[in-house]
Amino acid sequence: MNRLIATAVVAILVVACAAPTRTPLPAVSAHPTQSLATAAPSAPTAAPSATAAPSVATTTPSSSGAASPSLPATSSPSASVGGEVVLVTHDSFAASDSVISDFETQSGAALKVLKGGDAGTMVNQAILTKSDPLGDALYGVDNTFLSRALDAGIFVPYVSPAAASIPAEFKLDPNNRVTPIDYGDVCINYDKKAFDADSVPQTIADLTKPQFDNKLVVENPATSSPGLAFVLATILRFGESSDYTWLEYWKDLRANGVLVVPDWNSAYYNEFSGGAGGGDRPLVVSYATSPAAEVYFADPQPTESPTGNVDDGCFRQIEFAAVLAGARNPAAAQAWVDYMASPEFQSDMPLNMFVFPTNPAAQVTDLFTRFPAKATNPLTMDPATIAANRDRWIQEWTDTVLH
Image 1 (cartoon, rainbow, N blue to C red):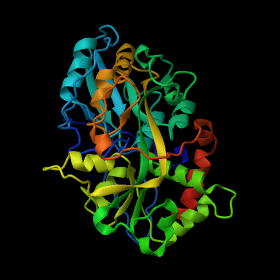
Image 2: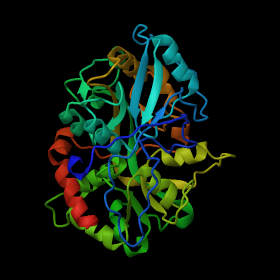
Image 3: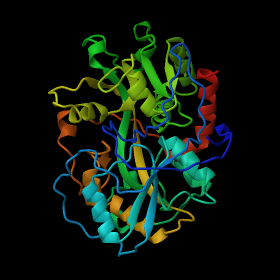
Image 4: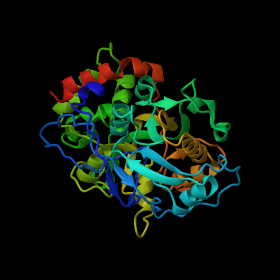
C-alpha cells in the first residue's frame, strides 16, 4: 500500500533472463521476489519496502523446461508493429522459448521482460513510476490489487480481439483497462511427511490449535498477493462483526507462532519444509497447483506429491495483462496483450507458471487432473469491496500481527 512506501527509488538491473527452475505457481502468481528476506521464528517481520529493484531481461526468456503441448490453431496477434515491447511483470513469469519466438516473429517486436518482485511490490512500483513508466505492458496484477492499479490510472483502455471468448466471470473491469489471462487458488499447503492422515489440519480454523504451534508461515499482505489473498479469505470466513472476528483469528495465529515473511519465494523456499522448501515449517500459504508442480519438477517424478492442500479457506486469484499509460510502444503492448490471451500462449502457461488459462480454447495439462489443482469451493470477493476496504484491512492486520 502506498503509505507503507517510504521512498520512490526504483533501480533497474540488467541481467540475463532465466525462467525459474520450478514454479509452484503463479502467482500466481506465486509471484516470488529475488530478495529472500526471512523473519525470526519468534515474531513476525516488519513490513518490507515495496521498492526493491526490478530486473530486466535483455534476451528472450528461457523455457522452464516444460514441453509445450500441441497448440490449437488461432488467428495471429496484431499486425506487425516492430520495435521493442517492455513487459513489467512479477518474478514468476515464465514462458517457453518457442512461444516467445512466435510472438516476436508475428509481431515484429522484440520482447524484454522486467521482473519486479511479488505482484504487490510490482504494482506499487508501477504506481510510483507512472509518470515515466518502466515498460509498455504489465502482466500479473490480480484481483486483490487490481483496484489499486485502476484507481492510480496506470493503464489505458484496450479491448483485445483475442479476449472475445474469455468468460465474463473473469472480466472484472467494465472499462476494459485489463484483460484476464489466468486464474488459480491460493490455499494452505502442507508437508505430508510432517503429518499423518489424522493430524492434517482440515480447516483454516484448525491452524490456531496448539498442535500447529510454530508450524505456519504466511506472506505480508502489504506487498504479497498470496498474502493478501489469504487475509481476504480469513475476512470472508470469520467476518468483521461476528462473535469471533477475522482479527481475533489473526491474534490467535500470532499467539500460535505464525511466521510472516515479505513474499512467496521467502515463504516457500526458505521457510516451508515440504518438497523444494528448505525450512522447518510444514504449513505455508501457497497455491493449489503447488503439489502438482512438486511432482512435475522432480527427477524422477514421484507417483505422489510430497505436499498437499488444505481444501478450505482458499481464495481464487485472477491475473490480468494491460497496456501501461505512457507506453513508448503502445501498439506493441497491445500485440503482447493479444498474444497472452491467445490459445498459443494460454496453452503454454500451465506447465510454466502453473496457472489455469482463462481462454477456453487453451489446452490444460492432465497433471492438474492427476494431482487436483483447484479448490472445491474457492472464496471470492467483489473488487469494489476490496477497493473500499483493502488499505484499512491491511493496516488493521499490520497493527494486530506485526506490532
